[in-house]
Amino acid sequence: MEMLMCRACGEFTRGKKQDGEFVPGVEACPDCGGVEFKHNDTGTIVRTDD
Ligand SMILES: [Zn+2]
Image (cartoon, rainbow, N blue to C red; front, top):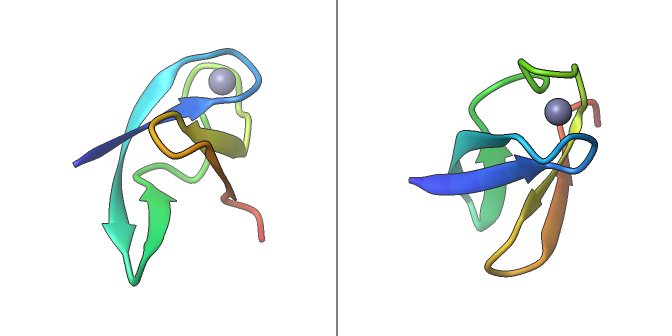
């Protein structure tokens, strides 16, 4: 399991790594509706609206 942080509000959400890419377990941040998340260990930015 990977933890991804919402870039807008800092809320953490669960995700996974799939085919070498991080995938948040939610379509949008449940707290603020943000769609951009950061994997802090690697600095990777992922978006759910692509
Ligand atoms: Zn958020």
